[in-house]
Length: 287
Image 1 (tube, rainbow, N blue to C red):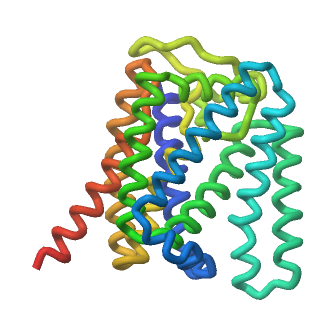
Image 2 (tube, one colour):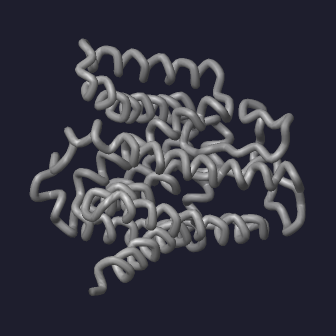
């Protein structure tokens, strides 16, 4: 029980660190501000993003079903390396470091090779924080507030359908564990846990022990986009309210996960994030 509590706190800590890091790095990422132009204000843009995610998800499931393991791993690791480059580059660019692009590419490739050689939970978590922080900043600065709210609402609905109805998100998560792919934060519940040696766990009943908890990169990324957007649209305090709302909702999510059934994270986390934004507006903009 003590180790499982540690894993849950670790889950919340990763979420907190990623969001606070994203807020602290806002100045460096302003080079992405309004990069989408009118598209950033278009309420249909989040729907295009959702359609793209659905398409990619089903493509990955098809590749996994066909047994093309090497292709599946190649796609995941290439996508992670590409995302890390865009996440790291602004930091070097902001401080006017020469050859910022080459340095960023080098670090991205080095971290990707490290994961390939040693796909352990702590390496995947480190990379996951880099990717989610960078992506949240880029999207949060590129989209205006209203499209971001639509984005969170659409992805929450999709996540619920994908877990409870079509169940393809559960299948994807099982493939991620089976092939040791970098797509989820891994929170060990036992000191001896190794992601490299992990197998797909059978569904646990309430009260039964778990080897580890898993949290998709998207469960951190999507609410964090609203944190950044709120902080940019209003002030830093607005972003902190959104973050607080997400953290409170994560407590309810952890409670539901502990009942032994797969749970979609975004309906809880996005609802908490939106509630935090509404509370901020009511307290400071209600007149």
